[in-house]
Amino acid sequence: MLETNLQKVYLLLGANLGNREETLQKAISLLNEQIGPVSKQSHLYETAPWGKTDQPGFLNLALELTSEKTAQELLSLTQSIESQLGRVRHEKWGARLIDIDILYFGELISNFDNLTLPHPFIQERRFVLVPLEEIAPEFIHPVFKKTTRELLISCPDSSEVTKVLH
Image (cartoon, rainbow, N blue to C red):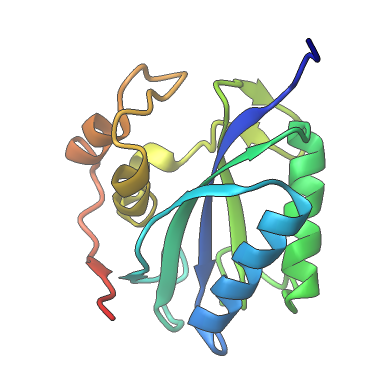
């Protein structure tokens, strides 16, 4: 039997410039091709900008995918996909064509120079927790030992997160 290093990975995608929905769909296709099959996808959510608020609103969605990549390879590939789609990093929390955040990499807890896992702000942001709760309500945060649903219930963020209906 072959040993496999498949990891369940959760990502949050966001866009607030250009044709946001089209950019997100392109990102999903590239993630599927370059990283691994997407097994779950949340609805799109319209969300207010975080951190730097004088910019357009975001469309966000959460994905679950399975990958054989390492955490560092995953980071490199997600940043490459952001670049392929036109992202240029100007300022922290600034407007962007695409943002791909790694929320969880299996149950890995790590603090690399360029990547902290799980993502350090999951529990503080409704724009992350609402779409994530849709696809992984019972996933247990490896540090806090709480489900996504429990984190959402206790989240201090009160910002509006609205499901986009088509």
